[in-house]
Structures are given as C-alpha cells and as structure tokens.
Length: 242
Image (cartoon, rainbow, N blue to C red; front, side):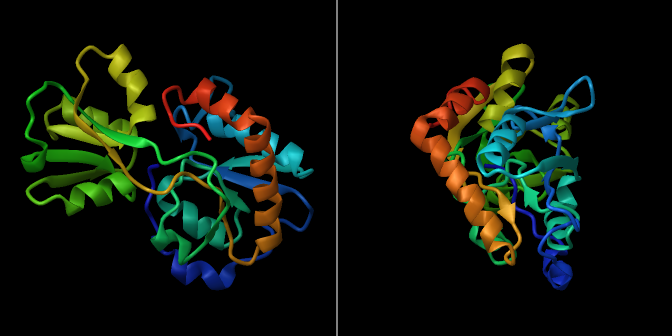
C-alpha cells in the first residue's frame, strides 16, 4: 500500500530491544492519520481498519497490547530503537524495508493506488504530482519520466496541493482517496489505477521472530475463518480479499 521510508532506521538498529517495555505489553505503533486504515476518532483514540484488526490479532495471539501514535517519517527508526514493538500503519511490504525490519504475512492484498485531480484530461506523464513523502507512491512518481514529484508530510496536504494549484494531481492509496472523491465535488479520479507494493504487513524488529510468528498465526486464523475478509469489506470496500 503506501509507505516507503527507511530514514535513519539503519543507524538505529543497534538500539533495538526484544520488547519496548520490561513487562509483557506489546505496543502497537500507528500513524493515526491515514483513514480508513488508521485515524484518531473524536475521543482522540486510534480507530479504523487497523485498530479493529490489531485488537483482534492481539486477542487471538493472547497478547496484552496497547496503542501509540508516531509520525510517519520516523515510524521505522522508532520501532528499531524500541519505542514500540509493532508497526501497524498501512505499511507496504517492500524489499528495501525488509533489509531493516521484518514483516508479518500480509493482511491485505496489494491495493490500487490512484490519481486525483480537479479535472479530466491531465497529462500525468508531464504533470506535477503530489504524494506523501516516503511512500511507494512518491517513489513511483519519481520514477516517471517527465513527471515532477512534489512531496508533503501528510496525505491531506497532497489534496490541498491540487486545490491550491501547487500540483496538477495527487497519487495515493485508492481506499484513502475514494471517500474524498465521493464527498468533494472538486476532486475526481483521473488516469488508470496503479498496482504498487506487495500488500500490507505488520512491521516487526528482526530480533523479534517469536512475536512475528505469533502474529502470523493470528493473521492466518483470521484468513481461515473469513473474519479478515469481513473487516476488509467493512473498512476497505472494493479492495481485494483473501
């Protein structure tokens, strides 16, 4: 899905610990700013697809878990340095990230990315395209011959960029863009969808193989009984199921 950032994670590897706390609580780190995957509700609590999924995975794995939020640009370094134990934040499984951290089995299939703009007829190959910094979408735009990448810290800023004329289009996960395009008459999908990444998985420190296997077993059990597909259909309508 989205997300391709390593930042200072390599330098932080030496600081990694088996668990972020002395007790048995597993801390789940998320961004809290990428609906419908994760966001903060009116009560200031983590909500969304990954909140429902993470709580169920912890129940099945018989783990005591708590949620913390972390800015996207430091989410991998802070996992590696031990500030939390798991990333569950719409993070696509990529070879580059896998050099620094481990991933669980995917809990979503590769999902389309899509372009939005204020009007049809945009030549995407020769446009200024906004994307969230450190994402697979930003990497894709950077690889496009003729296109100019404009990066922003948050996905909401990419939408603002097309509205204020800084960018011709924005590229992001289609599941993120769909409610925006539905509710905002100014914003429309343009061009073809793009399949990027290898699905979304939990990010886990390389030293925590046992924890990774606990979550893998829980993910597989949800695939086996259909409950993972139920969550995907509820929170990510139109996305591929297992």
